[in-house]
Length: 203
Image (cartoon, rainbow, N blue to C red; front, side, top):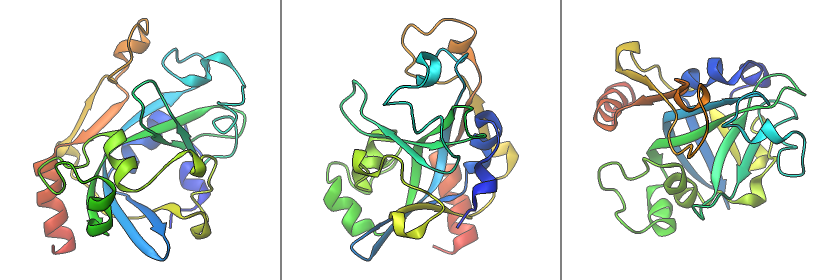
């Protein structure tokens, strides 16, 4: 399990290093897990794409807190979104986990998200993965450095740098520049991720 010091840095520095890490969800003693393949960084009150731009509120309180906690919110798209709090306490920052490659607990994931289960790009979206792992607002504020939280991140594998694509964040609506085009999204393509994971883990 990753310790707190791993998360205590600005989101744009942490986000690419989360690629290849293992997101783990424990439900009634059953382990569900997947390799993180896509992330987006949101950094501070000056980032106009970041929820923290409005300051400290009931909703954003977790972002202003200790790194290594889960910030989970329910946006207009009507599905929960999982973020990982970054940086030092009082400096609001978080990384949106946008996609995972599923490894453990596939039967339960399929029950949670039956449509298109186990097809290509099965969990290639933030709402898809939260449904498959049964991540809801009940886990908001959970400490990812404590196994008893039921959700945490473990060390995994390293994707070769040449496979990592860096681009602007997506789905930001009318967010003004320069924040709209800030290159704070990192992604490993599904087929590339699958090839590396099968080679490294022996699937």
